[in-house]
Image (cartoon, rainbow, N blue to C red; front, side):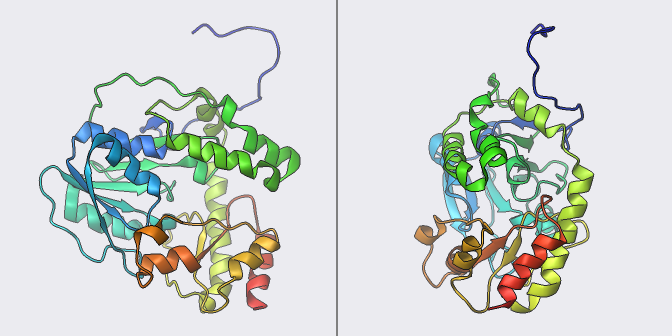
Length: 318
């Protein structure tokens, strides 16, 4: 395509490069998983109960059998099934904190492991292990995903376009987070039904403008600030290694079941992972408790010590 010269001005996006330089650039994490299933020809996969319902969609689309497994209080598999030749085990690197578990599973399953790093953007991909990432869970981009997979898919992939999925990002700048939330939800649902495509030029250029080094430092510092004060109130005892770059601070309060409501009333917006788990699991399952009671506190690069203390003070007042 010939680049235009002159005319109206475009967005001023500085040049740069992808954080995951050697990965395939696709339109969504869901597409990455579908790509792996198509490329590898798996007949069955094992999925965690504690995951987004969208993960099951590619299996249903391609008529791949799937079976759920439970995780323990360390967010690690309770039982490791013995895999047949055309089977795979999917593990989520929860909140970017489970890298050591990923390494152990890679030693156990080898290339039959699929790593869902949607919540662990900065975690490295292990050689020979199919791994995918979702940058929009860490940065202000409308879509996009990265995939490490050395198997060909055997089909031509069109390029996605993202200009019509930017409204929630633009509204947040102009009008605040609440104004763009409905658009954010619509975009989320639309991505779930997209076929596999290459990442849009807009998303690629946005991702190349990001100061990743600064973001890593800010996320680590904010997590440490929260953990130092809130660990005593937290039923989750997760270790954040020196290498980990967390997505959120997972917090399961020992008291106050309505903490999430209080945080939202004070304009501290916490994510929910994942409502579908309440339908998939029994009430006495650990995953059910996580989905129903855990709060996932924001501690990303947009914030600093002042915002972290605001969160801490609200929780400690209970």
